[in-house]
Image (spheres, rainbow, N blue to C red):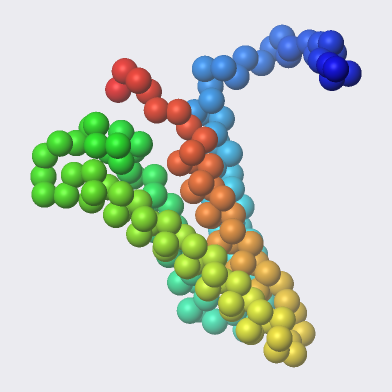
Length: 157
């Protein structure tokens, strides 16, 4: 039995052709996610400066470092095709990627911990600084994943 939506045809958008622009569009999306994450924490710190410790920004800094670490390694380096010299090779690229992902997850987990320990469980007046910190790290991590896995590598490069 065939699906009822199988014969449904949707016309394509005439003015937009996104086939060759995948890398550009994914890069724009990843940059927007990264910017939005930092916007949340800047807004929370500007609105409630007395309720935000300066140490809370360390989570976002580690998330940003993670973004650079994860996206500095290409898939060809992980497979061992692009680099065949040096002392680490593909194993070093895989280790670098693993440490980058660990830092990204650790930043999200630390932000979640700060949110629940200092803003949800504690009896505070405003919860937005903790929520902003958590959203910052989630958006940075999503931007990192989008930039890493959303783009396609050029076969000629």
